[in-house]
Length: 109
Image (cartoon, rainbow, N blue to C red):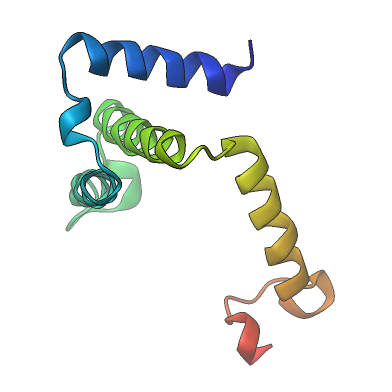
């Protein structure tokens, strides 16, 4: 079993044991990702990055990943495939010779 499959199966088991699938439509999963990402950001608010509580960062990041995996599952996406495809597409938009060392958006390179 692939690591992603193991994660998704564990999430689905947890969710299904609690009868929460009824709440996990794509819109609400996308909202949950955003809310959890906001909670992750809050850990850095008004402090130097190194001052953030690493254990809480780990916890909030896990929440973001969990809802992202559940959303991917709703659409039948292969997480590994879509991430690798995105990296490939970004490589085309941000060629090393133009993008290295700059934070400019692809249309400004």
